[in-house]
Amino acid sequence: MNASQANNTSNKPLTILYDTIRWEEKALYEAARKKGVDVENIDIKSLVIRLNDGERYADRVILQRSVSYFKSVHATAALEGLGAHVINPLRVATITGNKLFAHMELEKAGVKTPKAISAFSEDAAVAALEEFGYPAVIKPTVGSWGRMIGLLRDKDAARAVIEDREHMFPIYHIYYFEEFVERPPRDIRAIVVGDRVVAAIYRYSGDGEWKTNMALGGRAETCPVTGELEEICMKATKALGGQIVGVDLMESKKDGLMVHEVNNTTEFKNTVRVTGVDIPGMMIDYALNLKRR
Ligand SMILES: Nc1ncnc2c1ncn2[C@@H]1O[C@H](COP(=O)(O)OP(=O)(O)O)[C@@H](O)[C@H]1O
Ligand SMILES: [Mg+2]
View 1: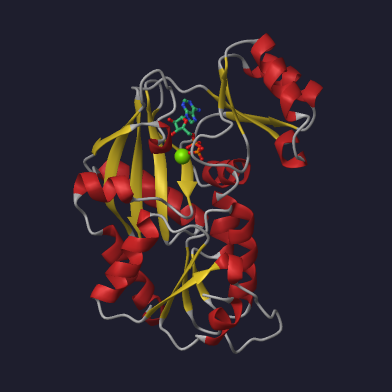
View 2: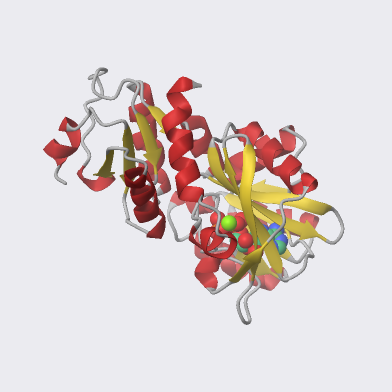
């Protein structure tokens, strides 16, 4: 679809905005078609938004599926500003996409989350870790698929990684460290649609890997949605204002269930494959009902 087409198809009830077509975007499109919904796909790369043109997007429901955090939040700001209902809203997109922002909101809401420390220069970061202790986990504030997340076992390793970061874009000079949480070699991905957890999986880390991201070769198994899991996931989702999100949790040996991430444009391919739950269908129903709420 080209830019002018993208801007001229405003009569459809539902828009899927994407930058990459993954399994999820195809499944959402197919689920909508199966329900007889005339869905419009827009590639964010061909999107032009006239920021003063209020009519075009007023009251439209847009499923924001762009992977790029920066493109996603900026497009969401523009579309929401013009009156569209973007799933998820701008506040959610902004906060969930930044691990430091999300940490603060979870903490404020009393949701258990790993202890963390932040610093804003190389020397302060090394000093912060001396106080915080090792092992520690360094995370870019904005990132996904486990990329650039490192396990720092001692000061030498920390210094080397931090020094490298100083040669990267300024966003990587915002240092965010978490305690390394002792847990089984798995985490939990729970999918929230509206006011409940619709499915959850355990993600086991791949060979020789401590991170459990599926993108790093992890393996998935069904995880029962217990009352405890539901409660912490909904508390986290509500704290951030999420409508459709993927909540990542760890089973800390010391502190029990804790949330380490809430995903704004969550992937759910493996959750559907393993649990058989029709997540795309539920997401479409939620989006279609949004205006009636
Ligand atoms: N503090 C931590 N302690 C132990 N393992 C962690 C910690 N934080 C993250 N992990 C592991 O690393 C993975 C990626 O971390 P996450 O914060 O979800 O970032 P991403 O956005 O890249 O998925 C998690 O799924 C988990 O397996
Ligand atoms: Mg994650």
